[in-house]
Length: 503
Ligand code: ZN
Image (cartoon, rainbow, N blue to C red; front, side, top):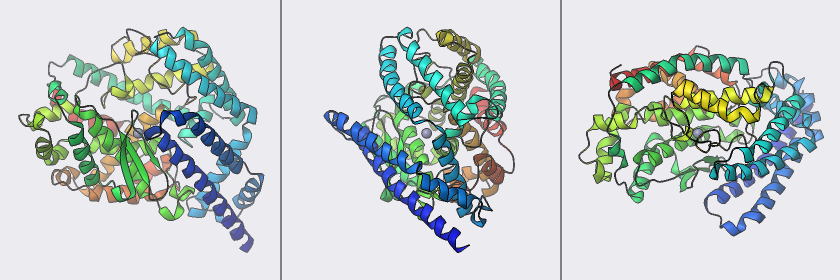
């Protein structure tokens, strides 16, 4: 028993040291995307490549593998939901996956992703899919090789999905997303047929950046993002990253001619940040102190952004303050503002999509990338397949590939299996929120009074502080009492949108 404990301490020490390297890499990455002068780019690439090599070397350290093999048979691993059990299970799984991938494949994937992103950028700027075809085809061949090397029981997609949504299966995601699609398509069509629509121009008046920065920070602090352990900066593509147990960085971009961009962006990233800030700091860098999956992470951002900050009670509290901060809103009624920030309209671009149609954009990508990986769809036929699905699900057809199949960087970057985590985030968010609302007895009243602490503490206790002790599927059942379902999201959307559009 004693020797198991010593081995466990060695593993913990090893992982904590790896976390020092990882957070150092994150600090350089954050700087690269926010403050770094452009001329510094080549040396920064060298620094980050060097650190990535060190980290990979540590995570595939044969000695670590032996320790984990020994521990996985020990009493410390008996309960997979204990701190030691979760640590051993996750580190062993990570180790086993990494050593299965041949070094040559890892390098080829990194090289191809680097080339493909440049080619993609150029192809998109020139609206020329044909110039992107070859490297995209190569990427999918490599991703298939990656899946084959990792192994899978169901479809090759399972092996890739596992990197982003561990323990989840393609079949289960496909089932839930198909149910979501069958309920969403008629809802979105009914909204499109409705004669009601908000005055969106009230959101396109002048909103000075400095006032947006103050207001956004104030609201983020009010919902519970701790600026003593984090900060907000400006970037073209907003993100959230943690550089240590008490250092969470979020970013946003400002559009003086469109109010929702920065505010909902800030609250989205603050939601990610509140999750990171709610992790147990004593387990920093170890599975009990880390987020479960991208989908669960996204659920926390979507919950604050959509379930909380796009609700009417939230604005009952904040709208008078917004009117003070922005003279452009002085003559606007709360109801008109509320309708405008919840407008649903099928559109071409995923990142600009509203809460309801967003998931249809994801479904299209999820279905197409599975077909590409399985070899059922040729890369040459991808633009036509893309446009067909947009017509089928959203009733619109992209006028060109730049605003169609070329709009996302993900496939060029090798992120195959990543897209469904966005919709899983929306589904988890609604299911968590419905459970919180039932348990805490009507959150709307609290929001209207500017109170968010009770919800935040509930999320902290049920989700954030659990780290990786449970799988996402286990967590959703523990928290809501039911397996993952499309229903809470559909009920949330219908509940909000039916009165607005008089459906
Ligand atoms: Zn996010």
